[in-house]
Length: 334
Image (tube, rainbow, N blue to C red):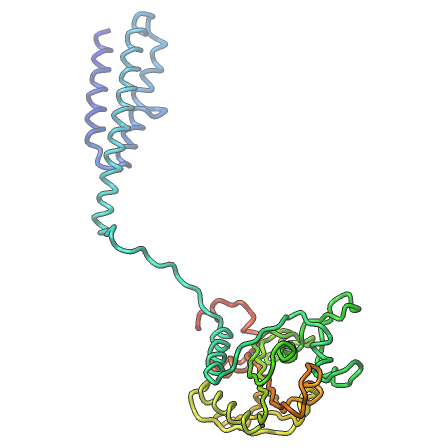
């Protein structure tokens, strides 16, 4: 019996020494498994008690269980010490300054269309234009009728329209931002000058230069003596500010049902010759009548440009579909 007690005592001394001298959590875990693991020395000793006499089993079992409890306490205490030491060492290595401000979260990127729209709005606002908005789900009345495009008029074929069901309700996805003009004029007295940026929809095939939804910017100026000379001066100023250089434009006769006369505006861009930029014209008298204005008292011009085209020109983008792809590798460039 004395030999067994000496064995328990020796186990206690050796285990206590190895626990206290363990230098890290990994080494301490090895010591734990050596003594209290499934095949640990103390565990195997406890399993051997069944071969002893009742008196020995009682005596040795009491001593072994007491040692197991004592070792568990010693392990837990040393584990706590080593964890604290590890944290302190990490803090020394990383030199953490708890008074320093936290790291800022990475910010997302504005879409190139957003950059361009904001710049365009900024330029026109500097020339006294207000920003107007209108619904993307539009009625037939505002999308066509008030713009001098009555039912069965062949001009409706110029726009491939997304009609919404039920068709009898006459709702559609707007095909241009021009409805914002008449909506605004109905609620505001002239003189006025506005721009109306927004998304529009066309039922057409997609390719490098066409999409089923894209962004336009409508412009309108109404006054007593507003003329195309005013329009030309404003647009030249706009393009000059937007592209950062003097530009040359020309007005080429065209047709739009809501303006008379109507023009296409071309711009000489680098060595590539003339490039079509927008459509414009003097607001048709029938449009003025549809909103309650008297054509003899008021006149003005309207224009519409594609923000997608401006974006592609500004950033040398050769495929409009990239603007709507959601490709992060593409968008992170801006």
